Every structure is written in structure tokens, then in C-alpha cells.
Length: 398
Ligand SMILES: [Zn+2]
Image (cartoon, rainbow, N blue to C red; front, side, top):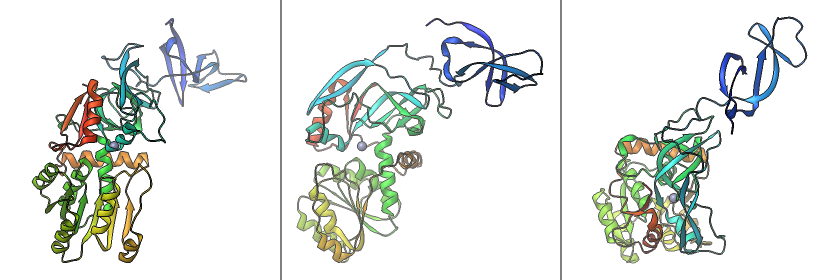
């Protein structure tokens, strides 16, 4: 596009900027461009009074905000990026696509890491209700990276800042999100990827669980989410029972200070131990954090009379059955703790930043596996197998 500079009066809301040089290439329709007119009398139709004189409206234009400039390392137009496309179940392809440009209220982030969420497993394995191929970068939603470009209207974020964002296209080298879904994270934590989305999710589950000091709390499923909830519950003064199939996960839970660590392989024995520990009362609170029928059943069995059952696992592979007779008889409160409001989600991420800064959450042992972008499929295969030692897999794009 041809770039030329012209002297004009610019009228914004309530102010005139005299003879500012403006690049014609950056004009967009929408705001007012005007030029001075001699004299103050005889204001004609279509003219506006401003700054002691009349000016005649020439043309409708919008003046870009000061932000909206890209960083010195900004990408030239048409630069390409790699994005993973889930073509069909169990098959990713890395494609070269154009780097997306942010709209005025959006931000572009250079993705450093994107966690592989347990909820990504269903699209990976395939289910009748998914249609393929997925959009490039989907279903990656646990991103952390560096702000690289700000939309014209974005005022409260800085280029070069490390952030986490709520989006669904994070298996790509660049991702766009609305500015209100982009949360700055503490620069103190640049050694361990701060995966904002699952951490924010954990903070919101914890808030709704209302853990009280002295409560017996059972956490069924000690993956990434369960381990965060374990730490928060211990910090709140609860007696926490960590439950998992995998010995390695129980080992980490023990190191984190779990009151009891129990294998879910022998269910009868597990229930016996919990009954004895709690004086036959079972638990005040049970958090189900695995998203399977068996874990939901176990969590129900562990919830005491007038207790609370918090469902934090993502149950997305079809309907579940519950023992309504037991739920009914014990009069338990059942809380589905998934968050669907963006603003609340973002608030959860801010709370997680605070919790990590105050060392109420330690992340160092929780990210167990890193996979280079080219080996994203291996990341999904590993999540599916969950070998001993596995807690959380992350795709590395930096
Ligand atoms: Zn997730």
C-alpha cells in the first residue's frame, strides 16, 4: 500500500490535536478527520464547533490508538508459523500457516508451552460427536508464552510480557486471544511452565469445594489437577487422603504431605482404611478429579453423611450412572465444579499466580514430560498410557 503523510486536524472525543502527521496507510473508517476553517461565524450544516473555531468535517476516519504497534521483533506480514492439525483420531499433521493478526481487542502470543489436558484425550481417541479435521492448534488450551503483538485498543498488557491465555488453538507457534482472557504471570516462575488454564481451573474448583480446617478430604485421582487440589487442601488445614492407581503418583502425594495415600486397586481395603481413619464417618469432602465412572463411584462411596462431593473430573465420554439411593440417603451436596464463565476462569488464573507466588502451590514436580512440537503425537500416546511417573505432559514450542 502507498504510504503518504498529510497535515490534518484530528478530532477525537473532546480534543483536537493540531497538525499532527498521520500516515494515510493507517486510516480506518470510523472516527472523524477534519480540517480548520477560517472565521467563527456562520457555522454551516455538517460542521462541528471545536477549539474556538469551526471545522468542517471532511471524512469519517478512525485514528488508531497508540498501542497496536508491534514489538521490535514483530513479524513481517505473511510470516508463516507451524500449527498442529488433528486430521483424524490419533493423527496430527504440522501445517505451515500464516501468522494470525490480532483484532483491536485481541493479543497475539508467541506460544512457549501448551499442556496436554486429559480432556484432549477424547478428541485424540475419536468419538462420534467430533468432526475432523480440528481447527489448527485445537484442542490445545493450556498455553503460556510471550505477548508479541497488541491489538489497537489493548492498553493494559505489555509486549514481551509472559502470559497465559484462555483459548483453544494452543498447539501452534502463535495464538490469538481476547485481551481480557490474557493474564500476566509472575516472571519468577519462568523455569516451570505456568499453565494458566488448568491452574485457574484448580483454583475455581478449590473455591467451590470450601475446604475447612480439620476436614477429612479425599482426592480421587492425583493427576495435575488432583495434585494442585491436594496442596491447597493441606494448606487450608484439612486432613487429605490421596487416591490413585499409580504408585509413583502416590509417592509424590506423600512427599507433598498427604495424610494418607491409598491405592484404588483394592477398593474394599481402601474403604476399610478410610472408615477406620475417619471413625466410621467417611469424608466431609471428596473431590473426584479423574473423570471416569469408576472414580465417580469410588468418590460417592467415600462421601460421608451430609458431606460434599465435588466433581472436578471432566466426564465427556457419555452419560454416567450414580447410586442415587446412597446420595439421597446420605443427603450429600453434589457440586459440578467446572467453570464456564470466562471472567471467573481468568480470576482463577490470577488467584493461581498469587498462590504460586506465595508458594502455596509448587509446580516443580508436576510437569513430568516435555515433548518437542514435532513429537506432539508421542505426547498424546504417553497421556493415554499414563506410565508410572507421569503427571503432566507439555508440548514445547520454544
Ligand atoms: Zn485443560
